[in-house]
Amino acid sequence: MKEEILEENMRLLAIYIETQNAVLVLLSEGEDRLGTLAASVPSATEIQVQPVTSSILLGNRNTTLARVLAERLAFKTGKIGLVSIHLRTVSETEAHHTLIRLFEKVTKGSQVSKTPKEESLAS
Image (cartoon, rainbow, N blue to C red):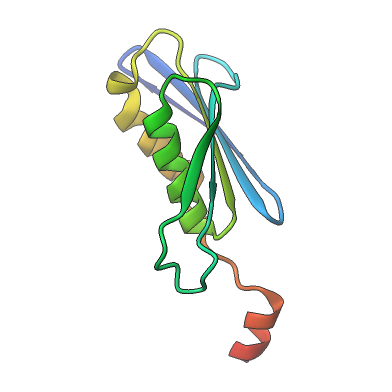
């Protein structure tokens, strides 16, 4: 899925890719580019009371927002969450509200899916 927001002279793009065990969200300014990449692993427990863990795999800009969004993605989906942020001309401070809205827009339908075992137990 691909989304775009044009706001206050900023053109921000998002690409959402989901696999069986991971979700990748690329957030960028102006054009599709890979930027600072954060990875997060969901809690190992079904209740998800433990915090998710995250790390920066690539880059050194926008690290806080990339990690927060990767953790949110992992928690929301129960899968490995990967989030990339690439900003060229605007700062993270200027773009963070819009990036969060764009992130929420592309991940709107994402949620923790039940395993086949959990589905059979629920029946």
